Amino acid sequence: MDSSADEVVHDFPPLFRIYKDGHVEKFIDTDYVPTSDDPNTGVRSKDVVVSPETNVSARLFLPRTTAPSHKLPLLIYIHGGAFCIQSPFSSLYHNYLGSLVAQANVLAVSIDYRLAPEHSIPACYDDSWTVMEWVGLHANGGLGPEPWLNDHADFRRVFLAGDSAGANIAHNMVVRAGIARQVFDIKIVGTVLIHPFFGNNKPDKLWMFICPETSGCDDPRLNPAAHRSLLSKLVCKKVLVCTAEKDFLRKRGRAYYEALKSSGWGGVGEIVETEGEGHVFHLLNPSCEKAVSLMKHVASFINPGHVLSLL
Image 1 (tube, rainbow, N blue to C red):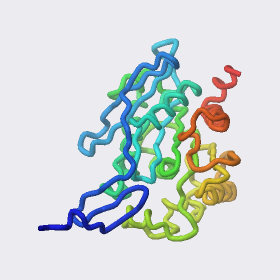
Image 2 (image 1 turned 60 degrees about the horizontal axis):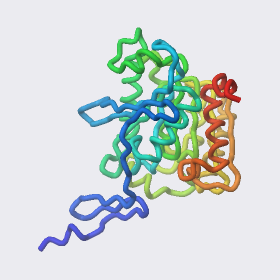
Image 3 (image 1 turned 30 degrees about the vertical axis):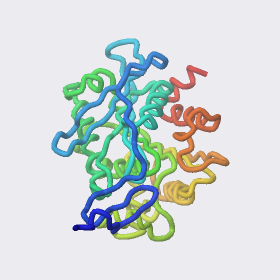
């Protein structure tokens, strides 16, 4: 009798383990929330398939609008989860994006990328870039396949944002966009990095395993602060870094901000730290006072005119 189904060869609690026969066990189940028209906020959502070949998709969020041709800032959001878990379709991210879209009055594209370890890095980067290219198809004359983007997206006011691993991916997408500006005609105005996953000052076993081609702890994708020449070329003109006092990733987030300021980059950087809170507290307890405050800060960064009009 083959016992390989029970033999563990790689174990990364609390995320996943891999057995000798190749199957993967995820420890954290991700729920699924269907799209809807939220009667409380007026935010509508829909799912789109971006690449049938790789099964890359996205969930779109559209706030209550006053005119069919009303143009809104466009937010491209990338979820966290250590590159291994979560999705835009979970209650955690569906609810967060719905609230952010309502408060900031933006159109949002929440990316569903392939997860590790089933799909090693750089799959998450490649999938996110595929979605960005797909978004770019709509920028020239409103001729893309998605009506919401054609009708409502202002492609001169595009923001990238993400939390944890998603913040890592968001940063890397801005770097890639700066290198490949000719690929699509969208203007990335700003980036929001919430509790970004940029590793630690020691080898990260998870990163080393899910990114077999990595150059190590100072891989520019993992530790951008060690590569200031790349930071200086960020295509956006403003960056918001959000850290939390008790977050185990706090130091690298702050190091990123300090490196960005001294890199020669010509934009405006801002850092906001939440005292007494841990990693992604705003997702786990979204109604607490500090999470509400952080939401307002992010919304104001993306669409200050709208948020100020509400105050």
